[in-house]
Amino acid sequence: MLAVGPMNIRGALDVAERSGAEIVPEGSVPRRDVRVWRLMLDNPDHVAQGYDLKRPRLPTPQQVWSELWKTTGAMVERGRTWSKRSLIYHSWITLNSTLWGFLLGTSIGILGAIAITYSRVADMSVMPWAIISQTVPIVALAPMIIVLSNQVGIEERAVPKAIISAYLCYFPVLVGMVKGLRSPAPAQLDLLKTYNASGTQSFLKLRLPASVPFLFTSLKVGIAAALVGTIVGELPTGAISGLGARILIGDQFGNPFAIWSALFAAAILAGVMVTCLDVLQRVVLSRMGMRS
Image 1 (cartoon, rainbow, N blue to C red):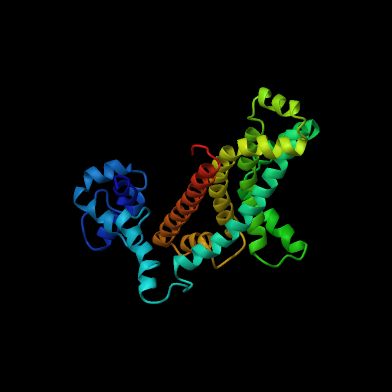
Image 2 (cartoon, helix red, strand yellow):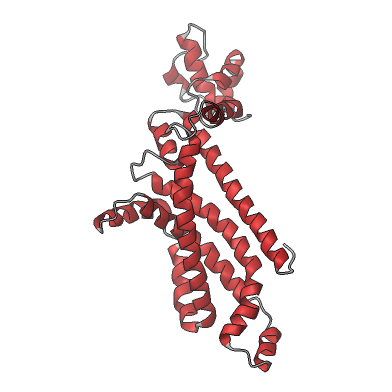
């Protein structure tokens, strides 16, 4: 709320000046070189107007909530839940690609972690490349994945979005799972050897159960990253559905309410997914006799 005034003061003064009010200094061009705090001190009567602009640079929480309700709850009441103007519909489109990407990224991360744990060659080769891969900006990589998908004949837009989502998701799962699989103490591993346990038995009876708390922690990070990847993947595809598409359309048409309501919807969606994983973690660890 405190940032709304400074962010919107120039727009508020422009509106007031067009309605005939006296503004210091006069003209939008001279005001560009004046700091916003100075404009607010020189025009205190117009500061409040910045909290009620139709196209503000930064909307108030009440304005964002109003737009969020208009595109979710109000549409549910009118029976238009799956309208293409509804954020519930767009959230479902984004959620679908996110879950596919999360499943793919998690599978890659777990398999990579097992390989790194049991193979020194994989540890020396795969892990450095996994770290290096995260230095490539996803904003630069996403268009390349989309173009490559089109070149190989993949016309389904959900596929490149899922790949981008998996790219951001697999790394936290990989790192967390490696840490978990290596968490058993040497004494525990030696004890299994004295029982003549095979490598598979050692993995299933000791390493895998020990890695479960680490896995769930990394899954919570991974699913949030997967959502970010899906939204980023929706931006360069020209998609008209999904939260990323709503953000892009809101930016193109100068509608900050659409942008911020989509951002809030994405945050709520991420919170719901992380909460579901947290509940699942509590159930699984309770069944395993561990504390969550």
